[in-house]
Image 1 (cartoon, one colour):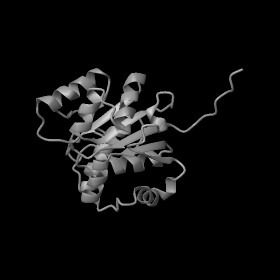
Image 2 (image 1 turned 90 degrees about the vertical axis):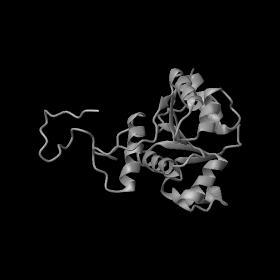
Image 3 (image 1 turned 60 degrees about the horizontal axis):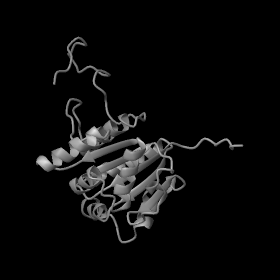
Length: 217
């Protein structure tokens, strides 16, 4: 007789690579944990370098740094060393809702597009594709050459969701934090998980703008 499984919290994987924009990954982790998600986090060595350069983090003691930052959610945050190819998230039998790589470097994107599972992050992404689970990538590079674009197209055809780190201005952001939250909100929309990170078009009409005057792109 098969035992009835107990309900568990939604389980998501977040990968952070060495592309600029470490704050995007950090804010997504904060929002996911605040919603009650069980979060499995993997950060590449280059990703840790960006945390040091962009956010002045102490990366000499990685687990301790994360534990201090997310102390409130210690029971639901699971950090995995990128070299630990035997971690649970490397197996398709470990059930998750999906994975977000934010930001995603062109090197990691290329490895995923070509099935090169050389570390835990790229292996976990490969698992998402083979198991038909959600895989969201937030590429952060400019300009883009043909190889970048072809790799993105390959992943899009495989079912991955590409959400480039592009800000919007229609809601008149007043700070860098608001622009960061806009992108993180777009990622949350595609999971999909509820949030209040940005004002949606049409929820509040601009002063003097009629409701029958639609936005044009």
